Length: 115
Length: 112
Image 1 (cartoon, each protein chain N blue to C red):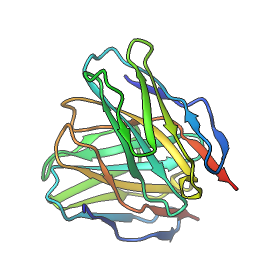
Image 2 (cartoon, each protein chain N blue to C red):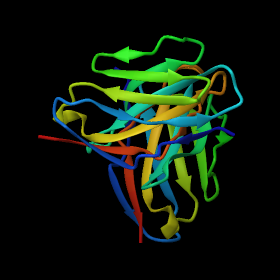
Image 3 (cartoon, each protein chain N blue to C red):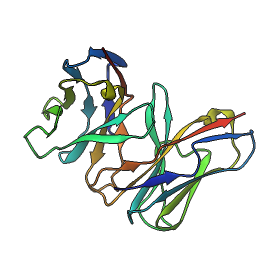
């Protein structure tokens, strides 16, 4: 079974600064997907970024980028130019290919962006 | 945009009651999921379905059942609610096996 570990329960960053959220996972599979989801106080889970394991290039989405280290089974999220609207819970998630897109989630990191 | 709608945002029920949580998606997605979210535990998969009338157990199915009679609707059933089922419940759907999931707004369920 896969496991996903987020070792930072809470983090804080000042507006306009950069922050990195950590995620490690454990799997014996070679092909899989990794995701970061954001859950603001409104509660809806929003997909932030997605990485396919067979792609060596790190995914980016505007101010959000990942550092995917397949050998180390590490998948960190970097948020640049942090904004107040980035305040949320962030969940790292793992998905095997071909398994009805079942997700395994980490326990989450609560990010607070301050003025 | 994909819309996943959960019937209630907040729900209060009593122990022993049979509770239904409803979820509807409007994008003809094949797969649908029910999770519960608890502080410090993240999201845990209860049940999922990859087709009408098909269901599979997730990681924590005990005390729950599901129904998928139509492709767009996936119901979570608490047969006899207990206080340890007080939680946030999230429904999600996805197009196929390799596509990301889209989530509803969640139902915060309290069992008294």
